[in-house]
Length: 508
Image 1 (cartoon, rainbow, N blue to C red):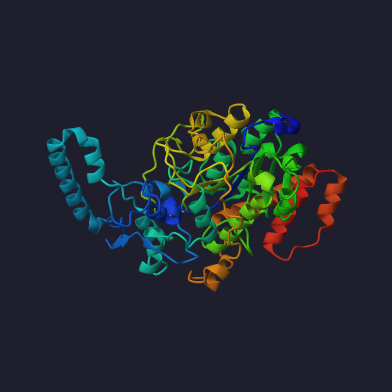
Image 2: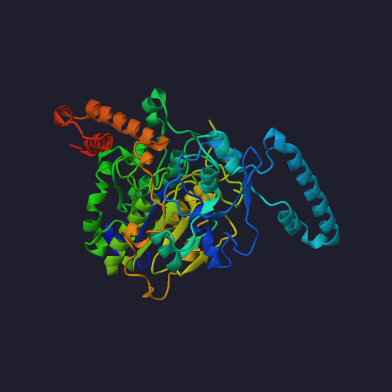
């Protein structure tokens, strides 16, 4: 499908723009919207607060928070996530007796009520055996006293009240919240980001953290959504700030794909042009590295991501013809160790690769919002769970693309949330706050200790930039090698990493 064919398509959605942020759970970011939408599976203000315990048996209830930075960064590697979501795992040694007594009483109550009301047995069992998880326990054991105290541990159960996150909550108020969207894998950033681009991570879950990993980035040679779009000659583009994580995928390295990467500095200018010249599919990678990361990865300022969300929405909304034919998907890659009360369901393995995990279970629920004049304000609560493969399923169905593995093939699409007849809405906000610190002063600003604290994703991306730099020098022509040799030293590590990427993408 060429660009000319695209313009003759009558479907109301001609452009899909995806902004994927980092490391927050649904309950934490959007759970309080149950106060507006009773059908949303979030935090019921009339119900007793859900709780978690630390190794000392201290209870931590779900409660509002006003902090903009959580430090230290909660753990979210596979082993930690499996511990966080396992409700039946024994507690600390001195707390096991109470736990066993509770399980015995729960079983007796369940049996008694089921005998009285056999027709409601499944519902009774779910009510009598609530899933709680071990989120606070894992955080406490990962960071014992004095690295974390009760105040820090409360943040794992904290949630942002409706209206306190200026951009995300403004979009949630006016568009469609998906309250059944889970991370694709109970693991960290990279494996989940591979799923949003390809529907698989080829059996690998861990983050790259050593020389062997660096030298074997070319293991990620799976087919991507961009390959499938290329096959149909459907235009796409990736906007990035510093080091695009998607460049860990080897199929992004050919020259024709490198040319589709653009710095975020060009975003507003591109989006202000004619609607028909903007690509059909766009993926936006936030700034991951210091000094000003806006990816929402702890321990950095959550308001930086709010400003990025507003920047993207406001730019699209300012171009009325483009806005009227666009779907913006705001999404988070994984939960980052923060509590969510919905137990992750089973999943279809994407392929036969199971080097480090079976991939038969989804990760923790994450925030997801569909933004378009073709969606209503409300909740999309599909009974079947969504995950990042659902985005690929929607895009694949929308443009009749080739297959991308079993997970995508069997994924639930969110297409039913999008109207395809009638007219676009005219009641959507013309803009949302782009300077949240000015509008929302009640939120607690991060402390100075956060600066310079590099997280595991930043370490991995720095290694990726170094690998791409070496690759560009080894495989490039004389002009490329000359540019690399005479390049001026960068002032910061972020600048240095960004320059390495620019040289890699600078095809001759």
